[in-house]
Amino acid sequence: MTWVTASPARAFRSSGRDDAPMNTVMSEAVVTDDTTTGTTNGTTAPGTAGGGGVTGFLRDAGVLLVGPVLWLVSTVVFVLVHGAHGWEHQALRNGLMYGVGVGGLVAAIGHTVFADQVAESIGWPTHSGFQFEVAMANLGLGVLGMWCEFTHSRSFWLATIVMTTVYLVGAAAGHVRDMVVEHNFSVNNAGFIFYWDWMMPAALIALYAATR
Image (tube, rainbow, N blue to C red; front, side, top):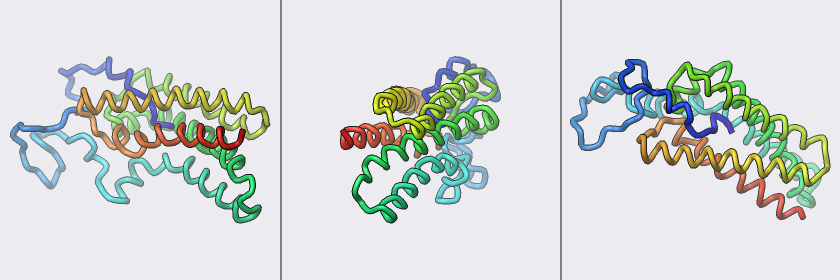
């Protein structure tokens, strides 16, 4: 979820702009070695701005772990307190509440309050009006996910799962397109969020099927 969309804003990129984000990787071209600045041929290579290792990951994408971690911890606590019976049902509720709900709200905040930082981490151009639209889509998912905590309607849960799946799988497809066509391997285009876009819908569908 979150910084979790394909890149419609890429239509606004102008190749002649000095401030356009660098979304190509060096292949057989001559590469200027500058290990002190992390640049190639005078430009920052995609995905290198945040640094490597655990520290770099937490700095660039750590906030994206809020929903998944809450989902996991709340489910483990349920099993420890109540036993394994019914854990699938509770894991589904927790996934909708934290994975979709909290994750959607975190993404909405990111695409508004920290829009430029998020854009750069994905490899998008900054100052794009599409960021607000992406934020509103994530906000809608966040509201749906949290609403699931207050209703036992499986039809409502299913509708939320369908919407989440369409949105996130579509976003993942956009990330793939960017990697293949634009050679965009920025940390929040080809990193954790790309895999989470597939994993969360798969987990929600599996849990929904298991609790029929």
